[in-house]
Amino acid sequence: MANDAPATRVESAGFDDLIPIARRLNTASDDLNAALKRIEGRLNDLGIGIDRFVPIPDKARFAASLASSADKPLRPILVFEQAKM
Image (cartoon, one colour):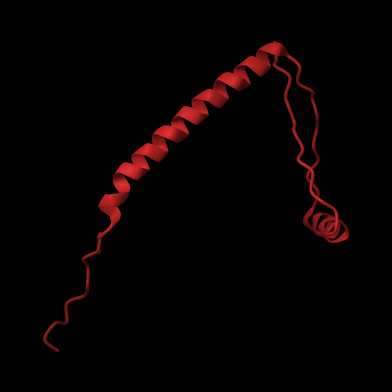
């Protein structure tokens, strides 16, 4: 064979186009995280959280509970921690 050398060059066509998009996404993500931290800080300052212990079931019980509630809609669960003073 004329060319027995392994192909070690990685084709990067198109990746250069992603650089400005990735930067915008990272900036937007950083801005959102900063806003959420401010909201979290204000909520903690209010001290209206509820201390809750949420048990994590074992795999078998969890699978069984999913199977038995397959026809029921899921409800979101919000857990707030009260600020420690």
